[in-house]
Image 1 (cartoon, rainbow, N blue to C red):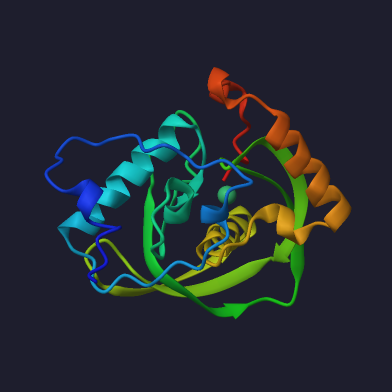
Image 2: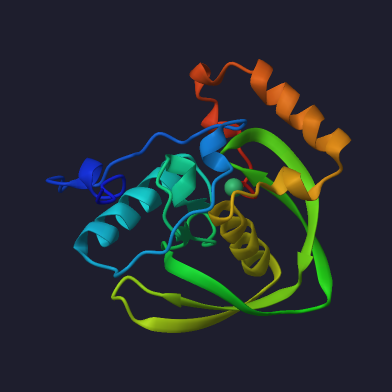
Length: 195
Ligand SMILES: [Zn+2]
């Protein structure tokens, strides 16, 4: 059977669109996403929608599984408020190097609204990926961009930032989330560390 799960909902759409973000705990956040064969116009359209969804949330990173698309695609924009947008659109990222030196950043996630924790990750990382023109690229990131990249790449393998915490802390956060009512859309209160 052909894999239509990626393309079919996206056909025949021209305007950018906001996609619904999946909130944890949800099994769709725990799957391993599959690589994209080729970055074509439907993938580019989807990445525009991902960016649109991320900016509206607001957040600084978003991965395809967070909108229910099990493909290895993510977008990031660390530009500060009042700065021009500087989106990164990343397909099939592969970690090719990560520093032994770790650094801690406060992380949040659009799939775990209003939950934050300090997470230790490699201070620097280098990845290979396909850009929006299907061109092979490398990127070396450090500091916040490195943390954000590793957080988003985790999503492609079904890992959330809470999976880096102790089971006790993780369960506390997930329990809080399952009790929250997400219908009031209090997005404006989110901090800029929400990826
Ligand atoms: Zn996230």
